[in-house]
Amino acid sequence: MALLIKKSCINCDMCEPECPNQAISMEDEIYQIDPARCTECVGHYDEPTCMKVCPIDNTIIHDPEHRETNEELWDKFVLLHHADKL
Ligand code: SF4
Ligand code: SF4
Image (cartoon, rainbow, N blue to C red; front, side, top):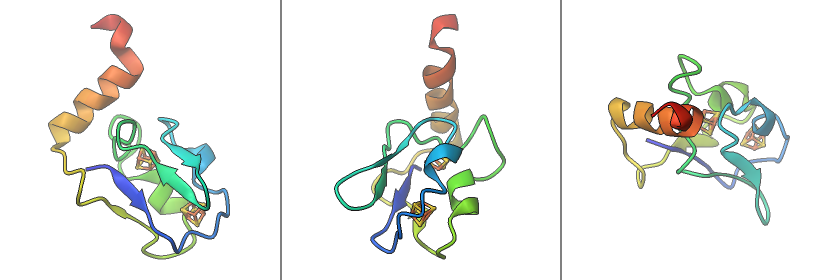
């Protein structure tokens, strides 16, 4: 499933440049994750890199509104990065 940034975000700017899918962007007050671009880092890393770099515990969480299987996350990765080869 895609990830979600909670209001406890302190806008430290750590996660945005680390996302391999350009899924993180600054919105009105805090950073947000675009569920259409978040693959949980499948295809790039073994674990979500934004969660790893975030200094505030439990600020980046799994979004219960965007549940996806591992296969669906892989499909999203392929569409984002290799659509020209499909
Ligand atoms: S889990 Fe990975 S793809 Fe999703 S927002 Fe975080 S860094 Fe980006
Ligand atoms: S790393 Fe965490 S605290 Fe920093 S901008 Fe990203 S979500 Fe917010």
